[in-house]
Image 1 (spheres, one colour):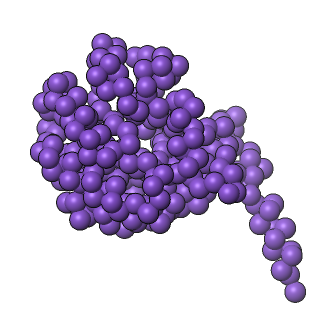
Image 2 (tube, rainbow, N blue to C red):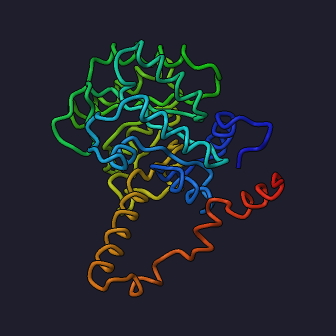
Length: 290
């Protein structure tokens, strides 16, 4: 939990200095609140999940304004630090400056930028394209220069592994750290050998992405922590669980005309209202009643 006198970025820095942080991905204020209430110390605002919540695939169709609006609501909903997905920064180095400034105003504790060409695609998809490493280094420098709080965590993501191979991904990771990134994120690294080899050649803090959702990581979080992975993302699990649950209850209503068969899987009304602090708002309303 963020203390009243500690900014979220400083809290995140303190957490990752102490060990690995598990960060499930939120896509709106409610999912963020559930993550915090479950006891997680950090939440991730997933660009892909936010895009899908708006009715779009994860192929770069959501713009900076739409993303910032949603991320601001996620941050406002919780008292734990939020790491946000900044995609490609929505353009060139100058766009990156504006993106970092907008995300920082929204209250994020950190953000990750990727080296995909624009428009980006979900890292799980084929036919990815990456920009030149030098261009990405310029974008990282722009991000570092744009932040107002030096504690804001700048994470550089590379998608080069699927495009150019492991060696190129490692080279880019080293270049991005040299350009000023605080942490690196090699997307689509799944084999135990690659995970361990990356840790040997890049001992600096790293982010590990569990993947599509529902699978076990190649190594458990304690072992990833020993290898220098400091943020562990679960980017799809929460939204995929919500999609399945909503689909099941809607199918039940269509079949039966009610959801009684799903009652054990529905949150109680009291649980729903507690999630959004209904009693506190009602008490506050009484305070201002004429």
